[in-house]
Length: 228
Image 1 (cartoon, rainbow, N blue to C red):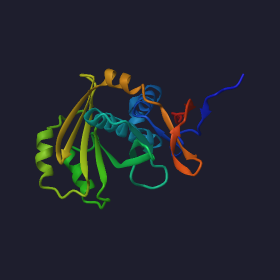
Image 2: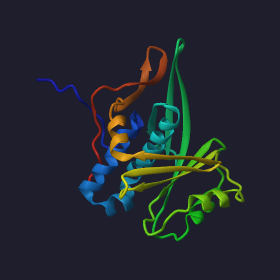
Image 3: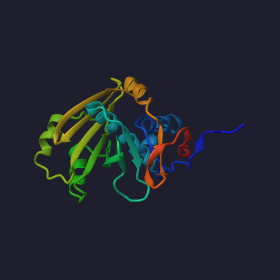
Image 4: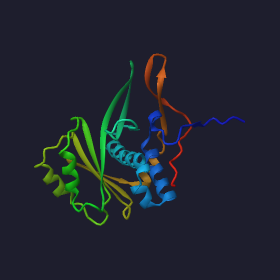
């Protein structure tokens, strides 16, 4: 009996693009296995956290324009953390469009979300980069209107800045573009993930003939990092 499922080296994201559903559910599984605190803070889960954040942004963008995004986790360079790939099928072949995403967390160690954003904005980034802030300071409420207003006085190196929060009590991902201002996207978590699960889970990097690109990987198994 042959196993038709491809095994990918543990957390070797350099070989594949993931669907948003895969990126989000991998992080959910880590939290269940290892505990939320460890999953949120341990350095060995950095790639999974960044992929999760990119997955939420991808679903928000998909709701706005009905695009289908794929997530690449950067494994070599220090930046960007992830990329969102959009693949357009044309008569001459696939055309690839990417968005470079730099991720940062706002957690309980920082009182004001603007401190996190200002620190990032003081650094030099390519103009096509998107900053994605995961609001994880659950002791603080975000006034998105105030963030948008304060951003008007900040010189940002980023093409766009998005902030998202997981509102578990309401079952919602709230995703807001704060620079330039708006849109606001609210995603009902169960319904959104159910719909997102219909997307192929993985694309494999490679080439067909002389054409490089990404192709449907079929059934794959990408092990999660261990908790210990």
